[in-house]
Image 1 (cartoon, helix red, strand yellow):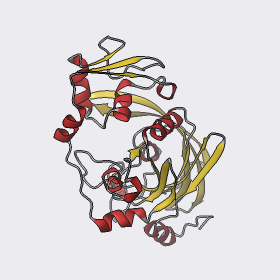
Image 2 (image 1 turned 180 degrees about the vertical axis):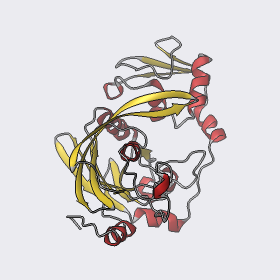
Image 3 (image 1 turned 60 degrees about the horizontal axis):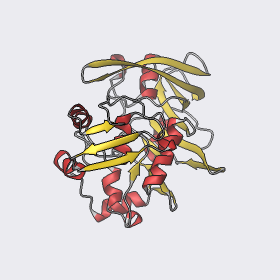
Length: 304
């Protein structure tokens, strides 16, 4: 059995493995690599690497492959209770025919994986809001980070958001409380961030514009606007500056471990984008623990 797909303009210059996840299913990377090697996935009738950038009008062929069955074998879905579904529905900021926006709580993953079961995709898949469709996760937000998060309601909307993020036409603002005083009250961080993929070292360029909103001798409230979207970008950049975020269990300094706050003090505060010449701006209120920590540290957020 053969299935053929043609790449449209919204996916132009996208990695092949990312296109597969967006259009076929959230498959494990190793599973994708295996089927590319076996020739069950071909681009323009040729074997190709997962990192290859596809182009508009490229042809992607899938041979004798049951994606749905493969997903079932790899992933056990989280089964949310009615109370869990209702609690997350109450966090919705906007609900329209194309997408929802919510103020995500800290401690919940965006989608399921090997390390996390409770996740937004499985929760909203059982919600009446997605009764005749399914939720699409269109961007990342760490499990322990709270704030603005978008889920598309259908395939076309998901592809549009993927394109907007790839073209850097979605502008996000984060708030963080970090240890110590930053060396400058405003500026831009430019870092080469390191990550590992199957023991392979990968170095990625990262950029973030920042501004200090308030500070004292022991901590700083900082506004951050990432230009690039690397994994754990803001957490890594503040750690590299010698000012790790309070509550960060991964990127921290040993002398800052005593009495560390259990919550990660990083909040996705605002997101802006434009669709069909219409501007959208969504703001997520600070969680109570964040506001309480500001008070304890005697920091003032101008909009609170």
